[in-house]
Length: 246
DNA sequence: GCGCATGTTAACCA
DNA sequence: CTGGTTAACATGCG
Image (cartoon, rainbow, N blue to C red):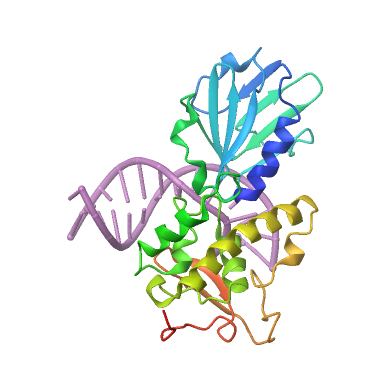
């Protein structure tokens, strides 16, 4: 689950804040009995982290690849990692990593969170330039630069910015790098809107696609970069630019 | 039914 | 210490 999906989760959960938790069903390794009688104070997100603040406890939930949550409407034959029963609603978290964290959230730097009001694009640009030999397909997935960006967003951003996934920072102009950063934020918010409207998949331009939507050539599918993550790209529209003017 | 994939961490080894 | 590899986690899809 990627950053924008976590933001949607916080919105759905915040609608249930301040309601007393009547029952806790816990399959994590943490002792969460004390949540009973408390209520969710606030749900926040940092990148792909979902942070649940309770008066005397703070949990961090990471959905990894396969995790999910439901509000009411539980999955059949599945034991949730954590279930919180309120008076009128039940909240279920499935196959996720749940961790109790310190209540002070000062460890989180929201300037790196692409979905945050505090997102600092200049800082991201500098961090890119600090790693001139790295491929941009890897840098986009670096949670210390673009917290919340995942592999789907990476694919779509690279196509929109017309950049080759295996391009290294050194070979890009400052303009191209700024474009990369701005397209990332722009697409993250687009992802968020489409996801809410349930039309995310149908708007993918390259992810899991066969043909380039612009030139109609066959897309390349390759596991790129040091991270070896799946990348769909058009080698005609996303050319390497080794001799660009700086 | 197999193999892979919207992801991260930790153990292990060179 | 650094960097690379592997496993673990656990589910849906083609």
